[in-house]
Length: 175
Image (cartoon, rainbow, N blue to C red; front, side, top):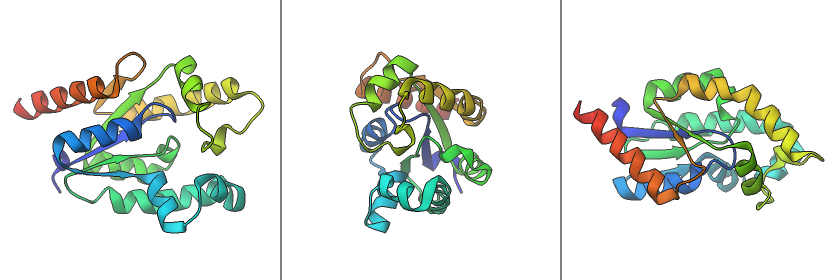
């Protein structure tokens, strides 16, 4: 399988993986997939509902299966869930199958973004900032270890970040 024919976006919730992924796929004329949306389409229920009924472990099992399948599609961009990289099997699959791009976001910016949505069951806690900081501490090293490239999403628009990603990928491909 050609490692250059799939792009996987990883990083914490609120980093912009879905938005940037859609822009990136459109620019490349590739297919776009979002693992959370795919799970919702297949089950007919929301991610928060799955968390409520099956718990995080049940959701992570579904996520691992869906990402395994979606990560095999050539000429595709896949936005993964923030916790998807907790699975060593998912880590291995993504690193072996395509280009892994880590999208970072600062804690203040992340908190502002995630509080704008209600579809984030993992932060359904009294202290959102504390929860986000804990998740970042647990996951940061994993994201960094898997990434071929890292881009901050704090200050630039999704379009600008997409252009930066495309420039980096094209420069690397030409080298």
